[in-house]
Length: 138
Image (tube, rainbow, N blue to C red; front, side, top):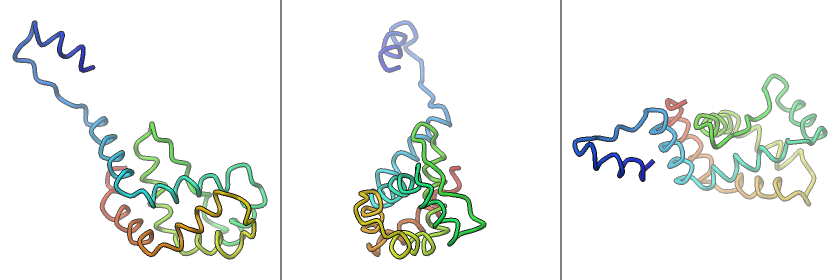
């Protein structure tokens, strides 16, 4: 894109580049993800905990019977990560109970990482902050 712009600038010196709104929102979402690495770690590992694990999904449904599984963030779709972070903020305490108290699989790396993130005090406030300030981007 930059190379094409430089080539065209020779023929059109008054050319101005206008960024697409969708791409601008994508960059904002990427920056939010970079600014909150603990939230990002929790969101990514929470996805892995319930992926292809019927027993864990069953435990999840016992604790949260009327709530869907956590959404899977897809980085090429800018709204999905913020939706997943918002979901975690809305269900933070219940997810914490599921991961720390209900799932007894200590040898699973994704569960261990989630436990570590839930034990940090800053993670809950970061989740609340991302939900409050960035959910409007979705």
